[in-house]
Image 1 (cartoon, rainbow, N blue to C red):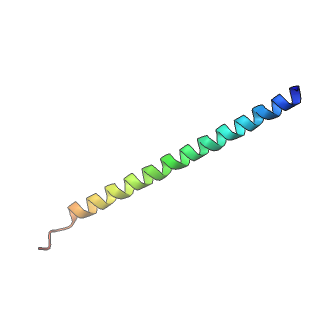
Image 2: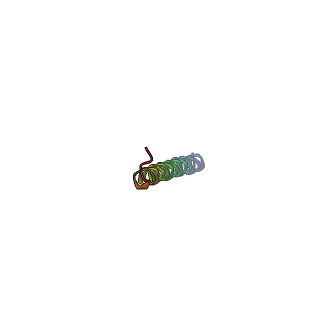
Image 3: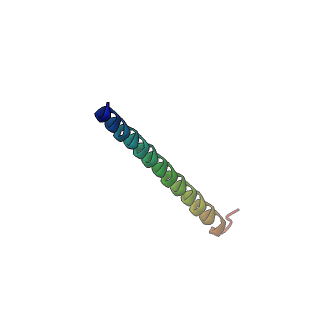
Length: 51
């Protein structure tokens, strides 16, 4: 029973770390997307109007 429980705790820790990694990756992607949108907005506003 003791060995099984210890293994189970490591499985839970592994799952938590995987989820944390996924969250960090998702946040990184969101930050990159926001940065790209921001750059695009600045490019648009800095360009002279060619009407």
